[in-house]
Amino acid sequence: MRLSTVPVNAALVAFAACPSFAQNLRIEPNSLAPFVSSPQPIVEKMLEVASVKPGDTVYDLGCGDGRILITAVQKFHAKAVGVELNEKHAATADDNIKRLNLQNRAQVIHGNLMNVDIAGADVVTLYLMTLSNDKLRPKLERELKPGTRVVSLNYQVRGWKPVRVEEAEAYHRPYRIYLYEVPKAN
Ligand SMILES: C[S@@+](CC[C@H](N)C(=O)[O-])C[C@H]1O[C@@H](n2cnc3c(N)ncnc32)[C@H](O)[C@@H]1O
Image: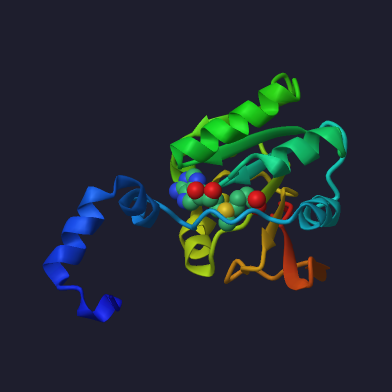
C-alpha cells in the first residue's frame, strides 16, 4: 500500500502504537541541535585549532557521546566537561568515560547547556546551529574569561570575528572550523 493511500487516522494510530518510532521523531524541548557526531579526525582538528594544551579545561556544549571530551583528555592531556541534554547520550558519554577510566579528568553534566556555569572553560567546543549560537552568544560573552578559545564546527557565531577559519575534510565530506577568542581586557 502506498503511504498516500493510508487514511490519516490509521497512520496516527500506527504512529501512537509504535513508541520507538514516535520517540525517534520527538523533538526534545530546549534542544539546540540534533545528535550528529563529529568525525574523529575533525574532533582532533578542532582541538588542534583551539591550541588545547595540558592543564586546559575544555567544555563541549552538547557533548553527544563524549568523543571530544575523551580526545581532549587522552590526546591533549586536558580536563574536560561535557553538557548533554539528551539522557541517553549523556549516559553513553558517561559510560564511555568510565570504561576508559577517565572519570578523574572528564565529567558529563546531564542538562541544558544554557543553565550550566561555563566560567571555568579555557576552551569551548560547539557543534550546534547558527541560530543556536545566536542564543548562546550572550552567555558566552557574560561568563567566559578573556582569552578563552571558542571553536565552532560548521556554524559561525554571528557578531564575532573569527581569528581563524580552517577548512577540513573527513570521509569525503567538507567541514569548516571557526576559531574565536574572547577579547582580553585592555
Ligand atoms: C551535533 S551534536 C554534537 C555532539 C558532539 N559535540 C560532537 O561534536 O560529536 C549536538 C549535541 O547537542 C545536544 N544538545 C542540543 N541541545 C542541547 C542543550 N540545550 N543542552 C545540552 N545539549 C544539547 C544534542 O543532544 C546533541 O547531542
